[in-house]
Image (cartoon, rainbow over all chains, first blue to last red; front, side, top):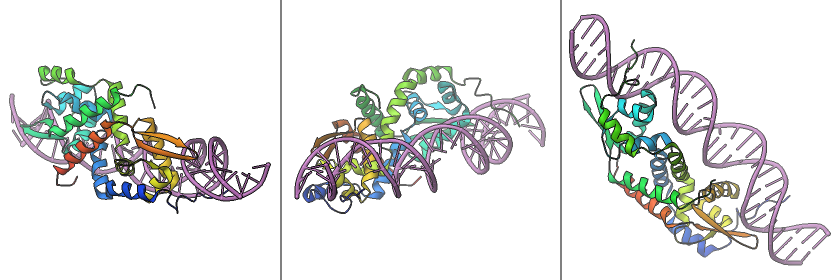
Length: 121
Length: 121
DNA sequence: TGAATATATGAGCAACTATTCATAAATATA
DNA sequence: TATATTTATGAATAGTTGCTCATATATTCA
């Protein structure tokens, strides 16, 4: 029935310093987390993957994924706010494309990571 | 007061085909989403960043982040299950390191992405 | 102008998540 | 063996999220 002492005391002061040297500040960590959060949903990843080689309007994106227009539109707004997709309007049709190359890179690296891990969580 | 027709009809059949060609299947999308989900939290990103240059025990990680041992341990379990960190035991002390190079890459690409985007969501 | 169509969005709900609290498990040491 | 210490974990809870439903907005066309 004792408390943990390690919340007050440090075991390896030198390593703690090294850890603090590379530690992300809270603001950056939050911004970065927001970006990864955008990629942390199967639906959004599928939307992004559908846009890898072609531009698509909301209606067609809904058809590709087999989802409602509303659900797709909500997710696109989020992806847009995080600069992951871009849109252009032509009459009443809105076309979406991937915003920058980093998104493709992130997707590719992520796929490499999971291909190196067989077992499940 | 009309329904949307675009959930039944396709506007650009050729583009829809192109979108389906690169579309991730549900299983892969879910696995990939799990990986990005692990990086979608400021606390976990800070844990990872603390481990960039040094190995650290749970106790010291808690000190670096200024969090409770319990909270840190819970997050480490999640990172471990997704092969993002690895642990080795020495007596009653458990040391954590980053699991593979993909994690560093993902972090780096993510940082590049946010550095290219000034405005907020 | 009025009807049809493509897209966006607010509200609400069910499911998920990050932390805290209490405590268990494992190890070292006296 | 008894105690201290490090780590892990189950339960509970407050906050978040992804979808649906209804509807608003914007644009085209008859």
